[in-house]
Amino acid sequence: MRSGRTVLSSIISSQAKLHDEYGGVVPELASRQHVDTILPVIDKALDSAGVALADVDGIAVTYGPGLAGALLVGLSAAKALALASQRPLVGINHLEAHIYAAFLEPLPPVAFPAVCLVVSGGHTDLMYMSGHGRLSLEGETRDDAAGEVFDKLARAMHLGYPGGPLIDKLAQEGDARAFAFPRAYLEPGSFDFSFSGLKTAVLMEWAKCKEDHACLPDLCASFQAAVVEVLVDKSLALAHKRGVEQIVLGGGVAANSRLRQQLRTRAQSEGMALHIPAQVYCTDNAAMVAAAGSYSLERGQRHSLSLNAKANLSLGGGNSASPGEA
Ligand code: KG4
Ligand code: ZN
Image 1 (cartoon, helix red, strand yellow):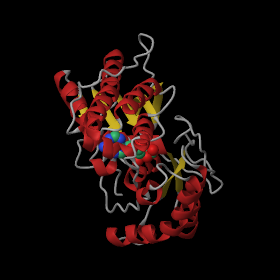
Image 2 (spheres, protein in one colour):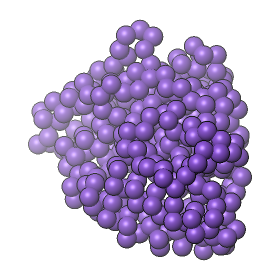
Image 3 (cartoon, protein in one colour):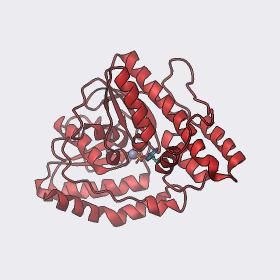
């Protein structure tokens, strides 16, 4: 990464095939696979960027939230690189990194303040961002994360893993109005989310029609429409409430075609500037972590080699290392 905006190389070693057979991520297998792939991936990244470790100004690494075993592998590798190259280490909150995917070229720069929606396999977070590293959580899911519901439904429907792209594809052939699934808006003024009721409603319809797979596209389309409607409505509502004109979308579910399209339509008609990363930078990748790292290093943030993985790292605990912390 150069200057927080230019990706010099982005190598992704996907584990989707490994976990497909189980319908979800198996933590032990995930960390073992990380151990096998991390050094070849780092070599390949440096090679294809045409830079040597000695040319690097700093090493950024995700230290949470996420699966502790997998985080530890990345963290250990990053510490070793930092130690060997005598370069600063900076730990990055994974969710904050998802936001920084929207800072990458060729997207226009994000101005502050912004409302950020991060939707991933483990989180559904609506945030207010007043500047680099300055985030406050305004709403989150009270039960399942948006991506988690895609994955759980795909598993119940025997579609495979990860469920998001599979449901997205099937939905394109279905009628989004075929099933009237519930939208959980919760108390008036709340920016929290809830998707477990929707999940149950979809599973009940699936139980009725599963002998006949012809219902799948309509089921997927109607489910997806229900998720997207609430995500889009609450994001716009928060932007209006806070008087914000910039909206950032991030996280694996930001790859969803309906979410991208609906948010674009609404943002345009309500005069908001919208920043949506290319699909390849929505799902987990190193470029977004490096981008967040560039801005953190610029602010003088550093972490010591005793930095530990934090499976439940919250926002604010993210890149909040004080300048020069050791
Ligand atoms: O950010 P991410 O790659 O990993 C986590 O940090 O969790 O997000 C993965 C999630 C999975 O739940 C996956 O099903 C979902 O993103 N996802 C999608 C799409 N592509 C990936 N969900 C809906 N539509 C998609 N096209
Ligand atoms: Zn992620």
